[in-house]
Length: 241
Figure 1 (cartoon, helix red, strand yellow):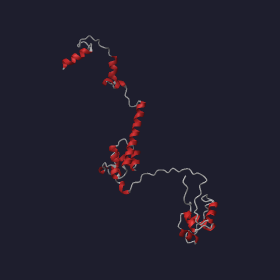
Figure 2: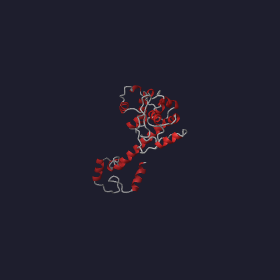
Figure 3: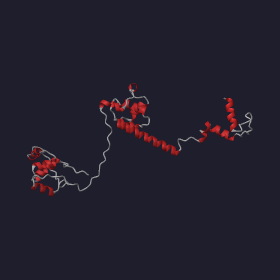
Figure 4: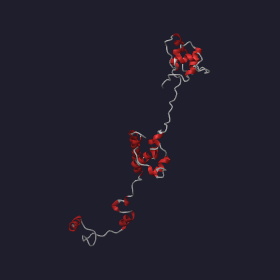
């Protein structure tokens, strides 16, 4: 974990150091991240008047030994003390994409382009890519947008609403998600039709009728039933040709 380079309340810390130590203005200014003239103004009560001093020793930002060593050597600079307790990392929530006001009118054109060229995109994909709303996407899809007559398909990269890298990455993710859905459907058997509906071009009823109809005995005579051999089939086809 990175150590803070300046105290949390620099001016209040400077007030306390001026009142309770013999540190030079340069030492205090270097530790608090202030200008030496500003520290002098605090000492003269021209700056930060009325601010209550903040003890950096009590807050764990400095040690008493470090202050005493700096008081003995004016050239020595103070450094923030290492924290006694490790603070958990704070995960920052990603803010929604910001679009300049001058480009917001171009969003419907970009949405229309994506709907036409990338039907694999979900509404969430479009919202994440160009920062629009679900209701806007729905209105453009249904052609009920207030400006539907003037909306034209324009590449969002050309409009500056996203980079080509961001668009390519979104397309890749959408295609990967689609492939996973297809594989899951195949494993569940959802995309497979019953074999009797596909074999030989028969439907279910025709297939059942053919299965229950008694077979005609093969006599070798084409007028009486099915051909007796493959040789007959070949000769019949040659005669027809």
